[in-house]
Image (cartoon, rainbow, N blue to C red; front, side, top):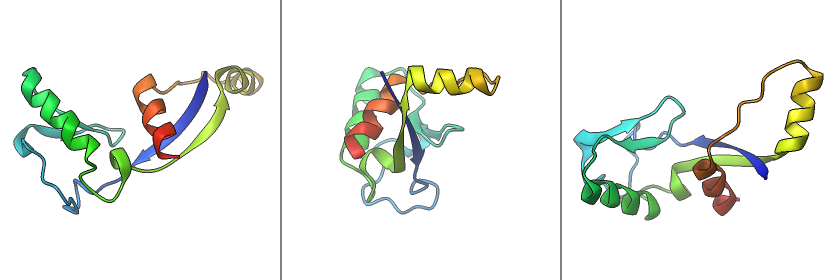
Length: 101
């Protein structure tokens, strides 16, 4: 299992989108910079996912940059050596970063 890091762009916040969001009042930027739609309506969620896939700005999946940090075992060993607790990214972000790089 690979471990990747990504940095989301700020194109939504700086209004540098090429394609506007279909439901801008429902669009929310999470603390990690990832755009999310605040709706349980599957049609709106599907429209949001389609918007993310366009891409709506010059960055694929709204990811400005990313890199591979290694594998989970290697990171875990480093964390044990330094006596820190690893925090792993969710699978969705890892796949997005892998598509971009």
